[in-house]
Amino acid sequence: MSASFSTRPPRPDEAAAHFAAKLSFETDVSDVHADLHAHLPNLVVVDSRSVEAWDQGHVPGALHLPTAEIPDRAADVVPPGSLVVTYCWGPGCNGATRAALAFARLGYQVKEMIGGYEYWVREGLAVETLNGSVTRPVDALTAPALAASCGC
Image (cartoon, rainbow, N blue to C red):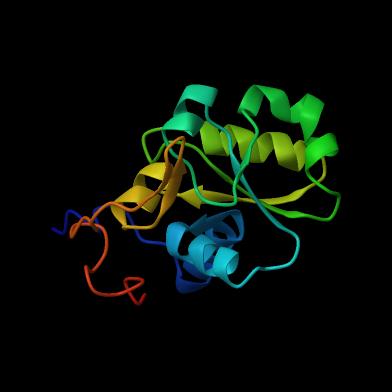
């Protein structure tokens, strides 16, 4: 018996609906990077981490808005009609999910950046720190060393 298919897989139409829905809620580091460099109109990338985490490093062009402050401050710093992408530390943290929920409750179109700050750094993308822009080497386990993305 197959371990992968020991539970009945969904019908193809069920699988298509599930994966389409998943993509409507999530985006990834590579796509956010591409949108930032293309200067996508109305895109606001929100770092929902603490001040200490923000100071350690953040996505260039991101807005710092800790999750707990979103309900009170979002309307003042994120224009209505913005396309919001939230991120936090990484896959082991649900802060970006909670931030996305807060934005959705306020009526914003929002997606969560899977991988978060961790994968932004591991994919060798530049970050802003208190000391300026920093780029670390690509982690070969997360991205090809000589390409801008995995090509998926």
